[in-house]
Image 1: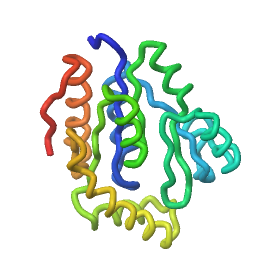
Image 2: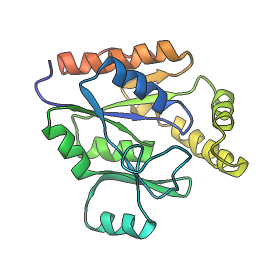
Image 3: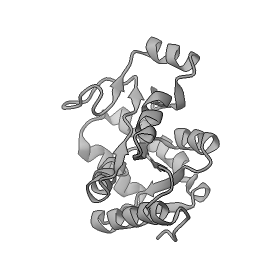
Image 4: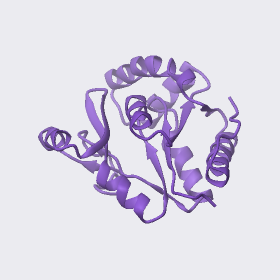
Length: 196
């Protein structure tokens, strides 16, 4: 068992399947908790405030940035996202390991602020597969998909910055790889070889 709760940062481009992999991780490692991020984007159908995200207005987001309330925050495809310090601290104090699902900009900020955070980059098998996923989920306009793909191209260049990279080609294999990384870090407190 871990000597102290750990923070696991799961990052990668939009549409790569971070959320699906994290759901699989949380089912298989129930002692982990997902930190609920903040966003200025509108809720998608079925999303609930405080469950999927904390939805804030841009003005409220700015106020909380100025107050130093965020561990990390970033702008992605014209919308703002962040992790509240209070959300993270509350979960860590309860003794839980915490999973953050955040974009690459935010992952860099968390790594700089928390040297012991474990960051895992989720990569698509190809750019074509990523486009198909973004189009297939039907939540973004064609313009938004194009903007997300342009951002994804830049984010994919960040893979070498991460000790752990999981390619989400086959869901079950990618979930196994993510679970293996997390359990290795929790049980030994140190790095475990990561499949690339």
